[in-house]
Image (tube, rainbow, N blue to C red; front, side, top):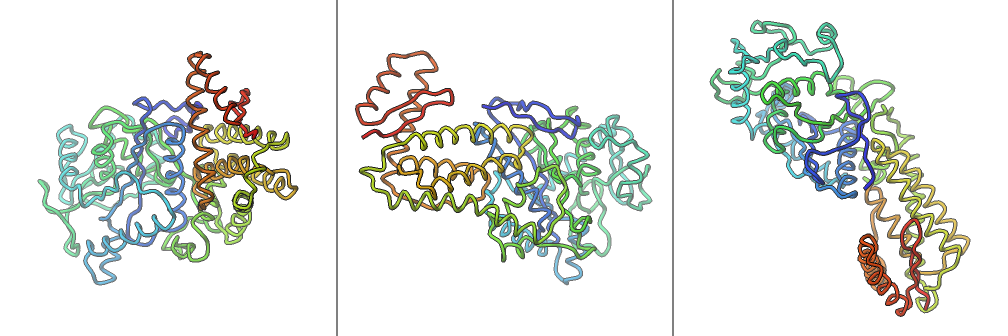
Length: 479
């Protein structure tokens, strides 16, 4: 397993990734506030963390992934009032639409999709504990977190208290004791239709408390990765740390990962600016594979300026992989199995290149999830393979099968290629041989050369020659 390095917003530097539990990763990502359909900026975050989960699993980790849904909020209440329906019905409608968009992107659902409205009891209990520890206080209009009581406030965003006052959402409130304090519980206003009973009167949760409560419920007091868009660093994630650490004495997550903003003409996408590009509108014109390639073809921390031309370019670039993958499938389906199992030196070089490509891809991804560089390697290899097919250098259907499996395997990691089945006969043959070689490698690792050599000799008698190279075993059928 490659050593993975992650840029940690909390420390401001790349750090070696060391999960709290061996071979197990717990990850929490801030999901949408369901007051409207998700846009391409939201999708960038969800696509990236879906990839992070798949990559960590690819290299051997068991991942528990939690993505929350905020289904009670000021924006939801306002939008529902404008529509003339209840806030809960409105949130339910847009939660469903979000899940439709998420699945339409062909993203794997997280292990848990917690919703705020299903965790009110836990939120109330959490707030009461903060009051008991003097980190929060009651007021006529709700409950507030006492920011200056927490000495570490500002360590995520690297801002001073003075800078925070400029950038914070400073809500007008008679109950606040300090402008920096933020709401944990909001007392019901006359015009609001969604509320719950609490020791401090009827009301609803503030924005920040939900993630502290739900991450702790599903992942424990401390977990490995907390993710979200870079716009959440302050105040949302800063406030999460303050709430959770005040209660437990621990920073809730070891690694804080933030995805750069996706903008239009240099401006943040927002409903108020009227520049929202909804993901369901994009998916009417482009496949989910193109959208994911577009997102992952830029390093996740880099801001992106969205244009229609950039999606068109992504579609053309992705076609390099699609052409190679499909051409290999055609070669396999039409190959003469009796003669096509023989392998040439040119084919052997391509197989060596395949192993080198995988090493470079994993090296790039292990360096702070550098999908941009990893995809460059996949594009280069796919282009070379396609050219080799055009030049009639790939004659063995077995080699073609291995190359197609390799391109499909890496593409599946990024979610950028829809796999198509080919000959079941070849699939069974190749996978059986690969499993036998994996078993042989285990014997070689413990220096049981007698058994390893016996397996190699048995394969050779069956017409399968194995070369042990510094890159690992390479095999070919010799008769």
